[in-house]
Length: 96
Image 1: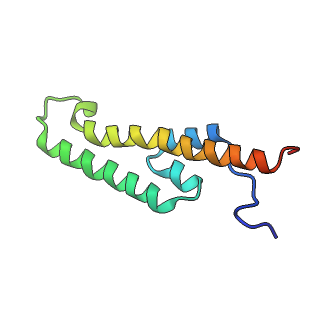
Image 2: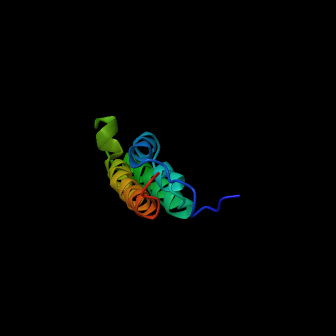
């Protein structure tokens, strides 16, 4: 039975795609669920706050801008973690 550290990590591009689709799920995919939960929570919370304080004539993007900004920050964060894990695994397993 292989442990978590010995398993091949997800490819960084797959993690990138997951992070683009759902906020915080990229972090969950790389094994950091608490970090992912925090990104998802703040994305939703800040989107709801900006929705309430912005005027109704704004676009959807304008009304949820701060939440979308947090989501945008979570995407490269998940990719960076995945890339570091991927490169570390490749160094330990050069023939794989």
